[in-house]
Image (tube, rainbow, N blue to C red):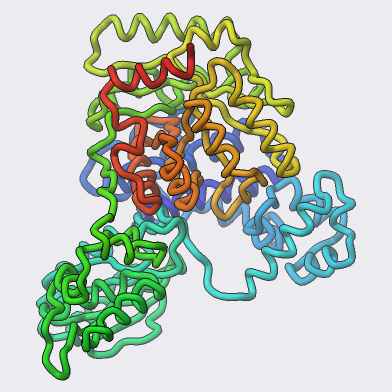
Length: 575
């Protein structure tokens, strides 16, 4: 059975963790980690590439042996090396590695120093205060681990949107070939582009339900069938993702899609509007008495309660009902509106492709410009640039643009914001750039006042352009640092600089709430991929989903501007 990219990457990451637990060669560990990141970032499933006879894309640092292991995982979901490593480490290590803030080094400390052999033993050690005294732990990590263990005992896991995408596409293709199936659509939180998804809701139209539910439950990735009836079925895939299928007739399709897409609060508000008009709105249609008056399309459902169509991303009952009633819904930004990407890396630091390769991929993706924004010198692990190396890259970019490659590469940097608010590079070299993207990469544990003042001081620097991934969060892995976002937004408005909506699916930073706050303040956002390889430009679609959840229109996004207009806006912040 072929594996999805997410499963391949998870296996490679686990190999890296287990090798690190065994104190293997750091270069070998890093190779597996790099391979995992690369596979997650591929725009196409590896199994699909191999099935049609294509070669595995070139991945920096991945030699022939490791590439062979990736292919083996893609074809079989199994790797003897992983089995061997699992047998060599304590069984609890695999469980501990799944907890946040526990990498291999900390897991080894827990096992060796505290003789931890179960999650329950870890819980007791945390409650007794024994964990916080270990090197590299402390009260903050103790609190997070206690919270994570508590959350494990309540409710199902949630999956990142990008991870779910790899499972949804093949499943929809499979269902579309089912007996008598017409339309097949994903609803629920996935369709609303929420950052994480608990389960998948799928709707299919068919005249007869039983053959379709039988077809669904026979899907090769189904690990367990929880329920199967004439018009509905629930399964759990081998990934642990639950999928609920509902089969409806064509005349109920729009009503069902509306019902299974909106949040509970949104649906209640729509039903209440129907009741005020003497109507009953449910998943089968809109009824006046026993007569169905609408339901074939979502537009019909909204029209019967006096509303225009409301885009799925807005259906959270956060003012969209009132805005629709007043004909004031925003025209939401679309992926096709983006003209460029203002945050990308190359092989000069921790990227995997050259400037020319990144530019070619962006051009093929329909972009007119990209900014190459390497890390600055403070990030030594990423081989950050010092002033001399940055100036060499500026010259390289100028030479590349002189070849008229059909896309413009802007000269940039992702410069570290130091703890005192200074930038990691001097103003002299920053002034030679087209834009300066500034980011916090350290000291996430400062107090709200300290973290806010740190960033505000950085924003006052003469060449500050964009605040990158403004809260520093990694979804499900690292909480956002404590910062006063309204103050940062107001400072950006006064200063005339910009905030980033980092589209990497591990970040999606800013949240939709902060996106909307920025919009209302008139602060433009840069929807940026933070690309480290050519395939990462595909992350922009996740950023657009988040932007739409934040009510952003094309006019609210910095990089929807043509290059001439963009340069004028950038010049305001770098002069």
